[in-house]
Length: 299
Image (cartoon, rainbow, N blue to C red; front, top):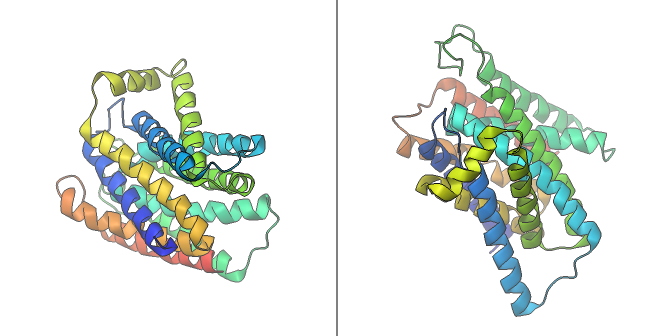
C-alpha cells in the first residue's frame, strides 16, 4: 500500500475507534476499554513483528531503540491513550475528535522547545487556528446548558482538560518513537513495545487508583464487544500510521490523518444519532482544526 492509502486507513481506523468507544461506554463506567486496547495493540503488533521477522529476517534491535520505544509507550500508550479514551467517554466522539486536532499544535511547540526548530509564519497561523478551534468548543457564550459540555452545575466538563493532555502525550510520544525508529526502523516493534509498557503502567497504577484495578479485572471477567472492537481499531490505526511514515513525508501523513475529524462526524451522524448531534460549534471547530493542522504541517 502507498503511504497515502495507509494514512487514510489510519484516519478511518481512529474514527471507527472513536465511534466504538462512544457506543461501548457511558460516563460512569469504570472500564472504558483502554486496557484491552493496549493488550490488543501489543498482541497484534507483536504478532506481526514476530511473523514478518521469521519470514524475512529481523531488523537488528538496539538497546537505545528499546529505550526510546519504552519512553514513547509511557507517553502514547499510557498518557495519550488513557486520557484520549476518557475524552471520548465524557465528551462524545465528535468533540473528542475535534480536540484531538491539538496534536499538531503541541508537535510544533515541542519542535521549537526540544529540537530548536524555527517557527514560520504559516505554522504560527496554524497554531492560532488550532487554539481558536479548541476555544470555540470550550467558550460558548449563551450556549444552552449541556450543549457546550458543561455539567448540571454549569462547570466545564473535565473532558476538556483530558483532551489536551492526551494530545500532548501523543505528540511527545511520537517524537520519541521517531527517534527510536532511527535506531531500529521497525514500526511493528515500536508499536508493540510501547503498548506493552503502557499496559504494564496501567496495571501498576491500579495499586493506587482503584478504578484502574477495576478496569483490569473487568477486561478479563466480562469482555465487552464494543470495547474489543475499539481496541482493534485503535491498534490498526496506530500501526497504519507508522507504516505510512515509512513511505511518505511526515507532513503529508499528518495532514491526511487529520481527516479523521470529518470521518468521525460522518460516522457519528450514521451510528450515534441518539447519542450525539452535530452542532454548528463542532462543525466550525472541526474545520478550523483541520485548516490549522494543514497550515502547521505544510509550513
